[in-house]
Image (cartoon, rainbow, N blue to C red; front, side, top):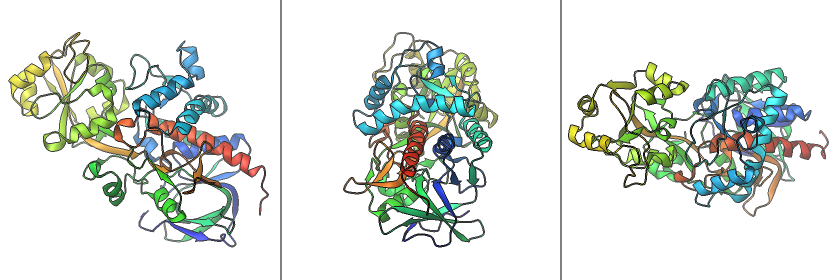
Length: 468
């Protein structure tokens, strides 16, 4: 379905259109979490999904969700708290993450995962053995498949079991606003080009960010203007367009999640867990160029700044065995992205660099060594080596509609629309206004916690309203 039709705001209410208490734009993790929570509250809703099947940015992600205080985390004896998680969010963002959202999401994400488990059969596993950049406790949760596609599959099955209406092939393009300033409905394009309308009591915009709109990326994220976009086509800037048309407040538009490990030319993600376990990145000259343990988001910028905008991930047999636990790495292997080199000379030929320069780099990677960029190594890399050619990519944006702690969209003066909600990629996140503010998992944190909060807000709003 083409996304060429503009997003518009219309006055009044759709005439003769069916009515639903809540309409959700987008069927990713945010939209499906919200609809499952609404089902728990007995609130009828419909999800408008542009694709033939819900997937979105979630399906392209690792599917890992950070959360403190869950049943699973407690069962493993992990000491953690919402306060500690909030501090980690702010530490990664250098204190620039929206304080009200960092606190709200840190407090809500644990109960949200527990509710999805208890009420809808979502199975969570805690990733153990290593910490993702910026996290001070083991709190990364995943479904057994350890992939975003697996997470989406389980959320879809839960939605089907709950009897939730998911309308696919429905590209939302009209937002209707009544004379009193409240949202009254939506208009959406069908695959055959027809525009249909739907009246509703509340709208949740869960329609991703703007990473797929090249014009907006050039305007708002100029350093990523030429970068590969590795996200979903649904990141078309719909929320930004509606926000500008409404006179809504936008925030943190310079924040985004990049990734410094996008295999080329295969176009698949290679898990950053490798870097946390001892792998390194070298450029075409065979030299390291940043502290890989600081985070995969800012690594995108570092990689793009290297000759040719590429780097090589270098690992050994021990790390190869570890990497094969992750579906994205197995996919990269199947695609031919992982190359084997029996020794330093062969690895240098693969990379196209001086064997002497590469040997000096590898010799500096040893137990107890602290590099000039601050990385502390705990073991050497031993031949045979394995290497993956990668570039920096833009995955999804972290800025959008400004929202309050109830996920209500705010006007320029800070006044909320009572029944227009936004969460996930459509809203500002908790990564501040720059690439380095992204804490691992912030995207799905905002999606799942925001979806749960928005569902509660819609439920509270509708209890005081009458159907038309």
